[in-house]
Amino acid sequence: MSVNNVLKGMGYKFIAEIGEGSFSQVKLATSQKHHCDVAIKIVDRVKAPKDFVQKFLPRELAILRRVNHEHIVQMHELIEVAGKRLCIVMEAAAKDLLQKIHEVKRIPEDQSKNLFSQMFSAINYLHQMDIIHRDLKCENILLTAEEQVKITDFGFARCVQDPSELSQTFCGSAAYTPPEVIMGTPYDPKKYDVWSLGVILYVMVTGSMPYDDTNLRRLHRLQRKSLVFSDDAGVQEPSNKTNRRQNSNRLMEKLSNKLLKVVVDRCGSLIMAHDDTAIFRARWPKSTNTILSAAIKMYTKLLLILLFYLLQYSFLYCMHILSYQL
Image 1: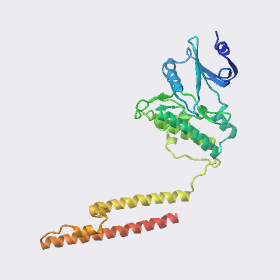
Image 2: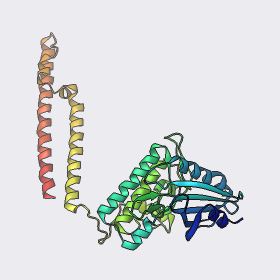
Image 3: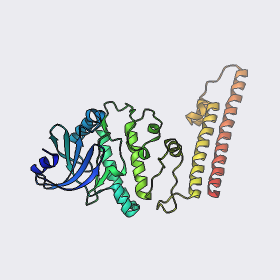
Image 4: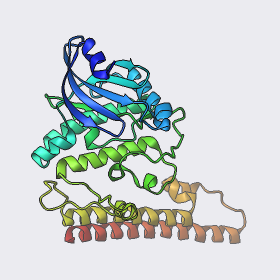
């Protein structure tokens, strides 16, 4: 008996085919049992690679059974047909995020914030369960008719037993993949998901990909550079004057801290105590020569302290004036 006949006999009526791969297809159908439209992913186990059938598919099904989150696609049931095909019945969506971006070119900032917060909520939920997705991209972010996010496609997902465990499998789409994966080095899978979320956010607000992924070597070089937003991207960047002032303030703080450390190292614990009376509570030697020597050292330290504060305030004042000139 064919898959279509089996599903029809179980109350599913096909509406349209909404996706197709080398060994699977996704169909939209109505369900008498669930009283709603559903998406049915039909996997051909005969055509599918052995590694997928024995490794990735069981992982995906195990994760779908575990998760229960409003922004993660829910699995209704599994249907086995003659041991050759597996039908995964899931809740349906109206479109995916990439289709949405193609329709509107780019998503307004307020709406992007709302969608991104839903994605973050779902990924945070997964990470707290030590589940990593590893294939986050616009095509795997579904949107309902009410434009609620539903994350789907857990084909490369897995459970992490040890939070410090690194992954080595190269998976996902290159355009959404972090540099360490491109370079083939072991990577933190949770950080992989975070990087992919950042790429998705960029695509939402700009309507374009942040990097050209046609050449992997060039892609890695591009990832090491600062992102550049086009003039019509609709993203407001801080002005150059603001950036210079912030950099100047950070430089001033860094240099003043370094100066403080040098003087403290020179003057010893006396400065660290910040107690002026500590000088006069020192142990005085009995002989006149050693008393004179100790007095000279004490006043030398005192002069160094005064010099230090004079230099520090002069330095801070100069940097303050400079930051306003910039």
